[in-house]
Image (cartoon, rainbow, N blue to C red; front, side, top):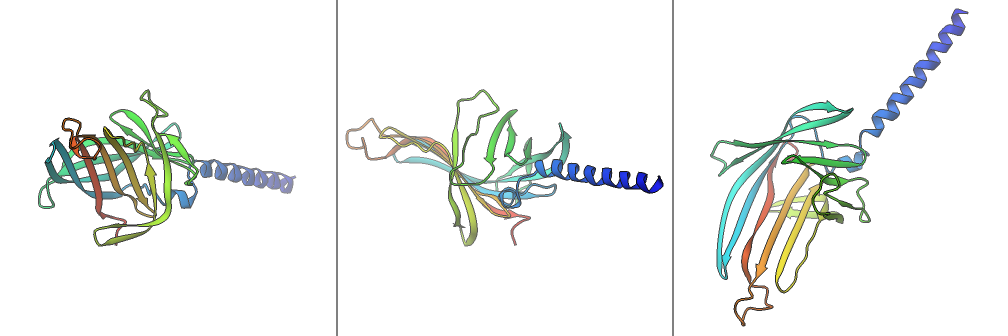
Length: 233
């Protein structure tokens, strides 16, 4: 009887282990997908940001500053590990960081979702594939914004640094004779976001000689370039 009872307990433990293993596996993306968006306490990324504002034909106001994103903690919400991300800003490397916002972000088998100004934004979805596309505003009431992967596995250069294996996420990149919008994110494997570009531009329509020539009259744009991270050598 004791042997039969011990065998029963052993069998139940094996089944329980398998069930727990399956549940844990369902909460995390495959390793190759997760490599493009590492996420753990202590991670940080520092970006050189260039902001350009166009105030008229031939008139541009540009400024540069640095942004740091750092994972400072985590909590469990509905069985999902949710990380706290602190964003800070400074004018240059000699200045002190000033905290500007705290938001949450999580990653599971299906997606990466960031809570930005209390609005959930789908940053990535899995699997990472050139045929994959998604609505970044799936979980909020904003207008649908379609994102898709391109340039799978290509190298990307920032300054003197070459990133061997990257993926690009393109959003609405519409250009007409009147205006242009751009959304681009580049992620490097084992590092995360390395480059970001956003732009909303209006082309000159006020003078006959500039119509249809792509001359910027108004609008603004951002460029983020990774300059430091715990994942960089």
